[in-house]
Structure formats: C-alpha cells, structure tokens
Amino acid sequence: QVQLVESGGGLVQAGGSLRLSCVVSGRTFSSYRMAWFRQAPGKEREFVASIRWSDGSTRYADSVKGRFTITRDNAKNTVYLQMNSLKPEDTAVYYCAARRTIATMYPDWGQGTQVTVSS
Image (cartoon, rainbow, N blue to C red; front, side, top):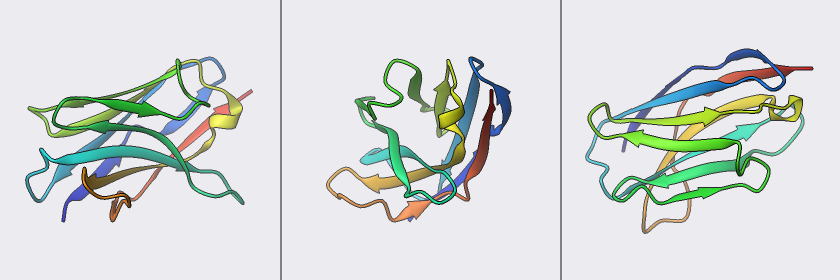
C-alpha cells in the first residue's frame, strides 16, 4: 500500500534528544494514520505515538507523553518523532507504520531504526 523509509536513529546520552524521520510514498495517504512503534530485545513491540494525517490528531503512549512529539510535513510526505529527555529505557528499534484511519491494524511497516540511549 505505502512504502516507509526511516532514518534518524543513533546513539545518544540520557537526557539528550533525537529526531526520527519516516518518508512515506506509494499511494495517497490523506486518510491514513501514521505511527511509531518500538521494540526492545526480548520484549514485545509497543505503541509509541501516532498522528492522523488529515488533521494532525495525535496519540501518545503514557511512557513518552510530554517527552516525544509526533508531527508530519505535508510537503515532504514525512512523519517525524521528536524525542526529548531520552531515557535508557527508550532504547529500542523504532518502527514507522501506516494504516487507514478506518482500520485497526498496521499492515505497512518500515525497516526500523536503532535508538540507543546510554546512561
């Protein structure tokens, strides 16, 4: 349906910031919700944040609320995850995902980008 290309992962110290990017292509996606998930080794993949493309409506996991901000740039077809006040427990592979707003599951995923937060 759509293709997602992620970038921006890396190594950062606790308390630092990082911005992840996800470029979306393939089909029109004005009716899509974009999301970021993350998965740490040995743990289940968990929801981080999402944004409805049409109006910018956002949702956040409690663990990142107030620290992370998800945004989108219509001109660049890109969704961002601004991560501030990073903690070691934020260390994970972060995945960009997309689904139609009427759906409940995310069928389209990026390749993932590693975020490592050192203490």
